[in-house]
Length: 69
View: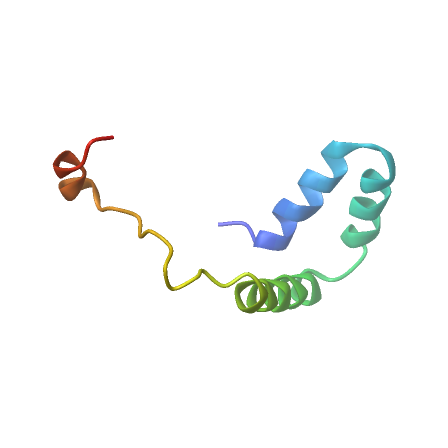
């Protein structure tokens, strides 16, 4: 499995414009550093955009037939 930060670089490079330049610059950063930065952003994102306690849960497949979807 490829590191997650590689996916970010590929996506940015494919967007074009200034994003392509950012993707090229990110390629210059060692993968271990990019992965550490990616993990840090993921931790921060989960704290900032935490799921509210009153949000509806995702219903497992074996229970979906009990609901009108």
